[in-house]
Image (cartoon, rainbow, N blue to C red):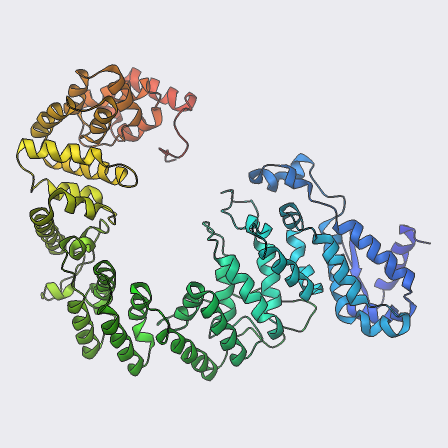
Length: 632
């Protein structure tokens, strides 16, 4: 009669059996085996029963998620805001699983007796739930997408493929950084799990791989594990492939990826020959289809060898090598047989004949890091490998001094070359290593300045990640006041992408020429500059009282702009300087910036200022978020 009390009575009666077909846990009830239950009652199911089920399934699953009405960072709090679906997640999951079972088993049970193509009805329902595809639907059905894919594999892939053919695919809306909230769910997990689920079937491998490759073109800058390129790496990982496709099928699909998506195909291939230990993740597996049966575990060494040899062949025979691909091959050289290592060095020799100097310098530095640093020594390379590396390194030496020395200023820290210092027990952490790099940098800047002047420094800034060092070392080459004044004005004249780098270069330069000379030069240059240029000059000057006294003679606009934009830092300021900077930064409504400088010198802060500083930290909220953080 449909009453719940009657159902409860029947469940209680069935639970008394030793091998009960139902289970009960709290407020939830269910059958022990859905497939067994379906087979047991299949003969009693009518077309009307199936119609009612599909009608109920559409009604429940089409219910959109009201949590989407909240801001993304608050959606995990949806129950507190009363934003809940009318039907529980357990009911949705149960209906989804029934759809999968009907898709897999339904036609065998009902098609001949009732004349109903159950699989086709499941497919039609999935399409009706998702089409027309919108971002809201994808987000609303996120947890259900793996079930939909397992229920209607061909249809699900067709829907995604149709969307990706559009000029502005909807699925790209899922590929974005997360909100930063620890509890906020990832918006792309459901889609990737759905695709991983379908990749187990060899028939779907090519379609799934192409979709994931297309999605990989849009990089996701967050820390979530689930990304399209991660899913691809898991599928093709040689020692634990997350697909039931045999080696031959995987090789064919990978070959297709290297042709149609070369950057993505390269990354998959190169990871297969990486020497040393690696970590693999298991992909989402189908629950009701047998596509993953017996697959997804560590395979035999023979299968690993067969697959990696094929991928290595793809890498060696790559149609258009460049400094990046050749550098990757050098880095992973130890994962190759000897004959392939020789092929790599031959490829480098051939490529270098027509390559530009900048590209040569990039590859040259990767060879240096591979073979001639402390880490290279730990690799315990064969003498033959080191000899070939030395030959390639020497042959790639650029003639342009800027390009040749750019590796010294790529980053603050430079791994020293062990080849350059033959001393027993020497390592990168020794003081002598720092002295060696310091000497190389001074010689490099001197050569660049002598040959190219300011233009050489400007060219060196563009690729550098340590532009303050460039300014600091240039100070030793620019010693008279007129030349220093000219250097400062040239740095301030640079704009666009170089403006920020030039300002950091200027910071290093001004900090290196000494306070007395610095004050004299700044005072002379500031008179020739506009208000905006003068403010930028003072912001780059050392953060101390010497600079602040020069500001006293400047206009109010320059003084106000300075305290608003300066990056304050602690550097042996006197108690008087600390109290002065507090007053000025508080006047500029920057209490967190002031606290950041003085927090290690409370004993030197006048009490009333310290009280005001702490008060303003709690009450003033005008500083840009994330500009200056406070430690607990």
